Picture 1 (cartoon, rainbow, N blue to C red):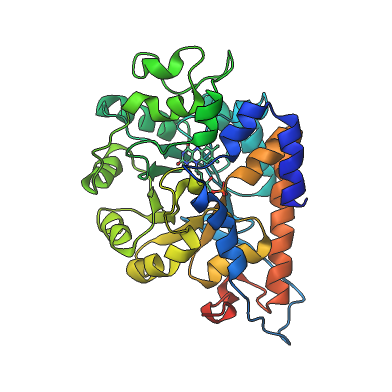
Picture 2: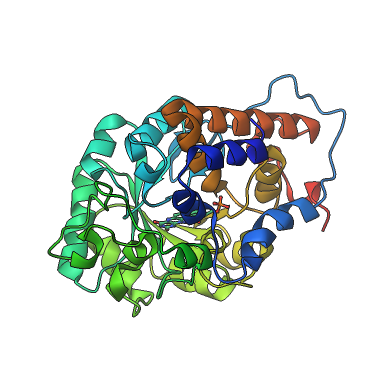
Length: 355
Ligand SMILES: Cc1cc2nc3c(=O)[nH]c(=O)nc-3n(C[C@H](O)[C@H](O)[C@H](O)COP(=O)(O)O)c2cc1C
């Protein structure tokens, strides 16, 4: 599966407004483009004459075994891509042996998604609502349904300006809505014809006042590890870890929030240096190739997250489409590791990337 071909196929399969919702970024989409370009600027320094008879990209994230250092990023409104939506993605994650992060804006109930992937690691991505009681309820529901970590997204104090969706006035089709947000808490999201971006913003009801002590609060709400997603600086990463984060995701939200923000890969070394061994560090944005995964690990990430390619796989062929994307990325990662002379993830060292 070539990711560019796949995106074209998905584009043909999707309604134009849905494609633009998934594909688009903020403002002039400079960060969106930079996310892919930043990986391709990096050059590898492969070892040769290392025994790569047996290569395994398997690793662990927060103590959970995964078949590769690549997780499914939370993306909203997956039923815009395929009727089975997040349930199909969860089944694909199970088959490929990796973690899926389920968005607060999932279009299937978090219990149904968990039932689609019994005994399989799912993490729940959280936007904190100004109504903390409501948020606590949502987190407890996720814990009861068996989700194994909470991924707290911190880079949406306000919604970025998504030109493509704005100019189309894209609205959610009838029957597709954020299934886990009750009308009482978020009436604006549940109205028919809500703009998808308007849904994500939830009319400003998500708390723009989020601060590091909220990580401590979240840790107390449920006995689950907390991953803080959307960090681009070492000092912020340090604050998150000191507040109790078990992991951070270095991310600019797929170029959808602050345009001209630094890319995840460019911010990664600073965050890794600041966090040290106190927490796991993941990175996302523009990861499209196995070589990108190897570069991320060489720069100190434990794993990467992938967003849009998963959606394209879902749009093209549902569950099987997502499996195909994941298996292709795993095969590419294993091949890149072999060609770098690094048969295990522990052997992917800093010197493999040109400084
Ligand atoms: C259509 C779409 C919806 C997204 N929805 C969410 C979300 O609900 N919560 C969140 O934390 N991140 C969300 N993200 C950001 C992704 O989790 C991730 O950071 C980003 O997509 C990674 O970049 P990539 O798409 O280039 O792989 C979304 C991204 C896209 C493209």
